[in-house]
Length: 260
Ligand code: CO8
Image (cartoon, rainbow, N blue to C red; front, side, top):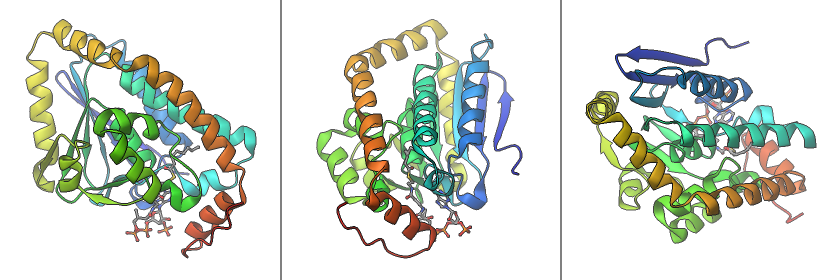
């Protein structure tokens, strides 16, 4: 049993959240999702808070996706509850009253990129790698990636990443508008804190107002798209291709899809 999969540290008006499962490349299992949900719910009571940073433990990954091991054997009710929890967490982050900065220190794949996309600003290390590789597993993104990618970088890039599963560099991520700024790995967190400190020095009501109004530009379309994503994800989860895709990953071999 892992302990402390969510580590938090508060410095003045800034909260840093670290996802701490480095041996599994910080994959989002239930404990991580529930820990994130609880942490963000508690923020509501902190009147001093001005910004949040989310990052991953270790040097290799921000988050390498939803936890394939824990999802692979789930029945219909189990997978529905998992995907709904994940979407709820991403939405809670999106609705957090203060800006949330993703400090992407390595792989941000699948649910990991979806987590970053639910944040207001995405800063990344020059070593970061991004992608939506769910098609390799016979599924689609389920934590909002099909929708939030469209708003962040346009429908063409959303299509390419979701259809090919391509893993792209931080540099390409900036060119495509997915990442806002790239830094050398050793200064990423420092730079994220510097940006958070700048935000904290501004009028808090104005920052919160800007966040609310910018988000509301896409809210109606986004929420209906998110529901459609869950239903399509669940349909695909029942296919033979999904079972083959996940079994192949766990057996460390290439999947052989049959289209069933
Ligand atoms: N889940 C569980 N374990 C993982 C995951 C993951 N997503 N990613 C990596 N790990 C584990 C590996 O199994 C390995 O464990 P072990 O040491 O016990 O064998 C350990 O982390 C280290 O990984 P690798 O040995 O594979 O490291 P490499 O450097 O060779 O490769 C990669 C790194 C390229 C990141 C590779 O690990 C990889 O491809 N990981 C999977 C990436 C992926 O497919 N992510 C998408 C997952 S699906 C998803 O996120 C859907 C989101 C919405 C779903 C809704 C759920 C209900």
